[in-house]
Length: 175
Image (cartoon, rainbow, N blue to C red; front, top):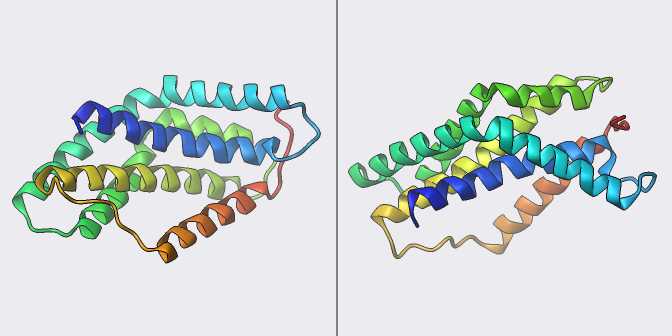
């Protein structure tokens, strides 16, 4: 997979996951607003993420991919080690994407709103960084497949459910 596809997929992961969680927090999960409003609100959040956060995230994804690709070619790290390194680096560097801090406005009136913002940054960075680490590993090992056990996938689904529950706490209307 080429650099451009890796960066685009990482951006898709890193920008869409926080948009889903933020839209869920604001009230996407309730039945009080119409379906069209919910979809348009999510689309507006996603558009904001791509326009304002996308350029900085793209530069970060590209530099992280190049760094991890070089590391993968020069060292004998395992797939899990490289994915973990990518996830941690991306989670740390995601906090440098300053336009994303405006998402805090969605959590106005929510107790401990800063915890939600930190979780959004960590989740988006972690997910996209793991993807970039996997793709960087594939450069030096083209025949590798992403093989995880059923227990791993169940834990990922439970973690996603936990995040949805966490973001349901203290929901409010956007307008």
